[in-house]
Image 1: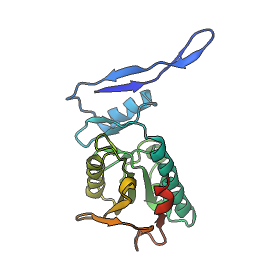
Image 2 (image 1 turned 90 degrees about the horizontal axis):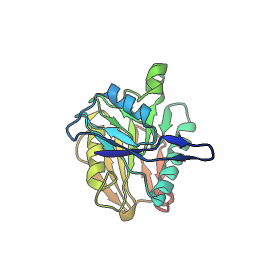
Image 3 (image 1 turned 90 degrees about the vertical axis):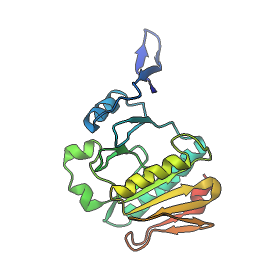
Length: 213
């Protein structure tokens, strides 16, 4: 596995980023503590840690997906700010799940009392909890970390680690998969508004605004 990091290189007249590949044996496994140290030393790399200790590289999003992602984060943040119950997080946030994986949903909500129960040190690192709501955005590609099979594996991991609700948004199909606390996901097509239900009172996604990128 190769990960491109970009430490700052300088001379007397210019400063620029040089790509330095980080190579890992395919059978290398890291603990969450070791993974946190790796991320601290390679802040430009976008990484996740599987429950078996394998490091996964997450590629940057395409521009269209990035536009959808910021709209998604905006809607969740607007909902969180409308009351005092929830805290919203964007796609750069890693959470250490109970199975010791470290995953980064595209957007998420954590109940405020759960967040406030963490220590300052826990908040600064990968918060040791599974978000209550997790949302992932698919890309049209059938390969890579944003492909449907990869994202379904992540939603299954969130579900197994205690997420109360998961949403898989599939813009190129204008479809949504709703992952409940347990059991099989349900697929919906043609929705204009996605409602979270009684566990998240008042939470709705305006899907047309997200599909538009």
